[in-house]
View (cartoon, helix red, strand yellow):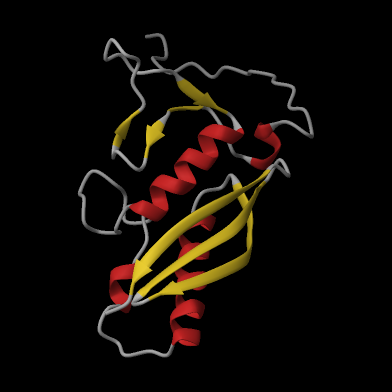
Length: 152
């Protein structure tokens, strides 16, 4: 009887500077309006278009920082942030900023496309801490990600 799973040899050439070299595929993503909380639509109600490569990766970064970890079963346990764990701890502002930087870095570095998260800046308004950081991909493309955390 013939083997149902024959051995096949496939030769593939991988370029040293391509996304395959880092093991990360950048792909595509639908554009998302984070202020409105929905996908970007055309006037006729269709999805406006896809973000590709670095833009898609930055969309992923923004979405990951906007999603609470463990809250939605559709996401893996590695996806999202845990800023809610800071509520009610009574930490100083410096400690809250340090925890925000740690949590945001862990969240963004869970994606194999992310090489570095650095350059955090913080601004306080009452109990709300707004932050921004620089993210760099494995392709050495960079962007700025912003977020905020309410510290009660």
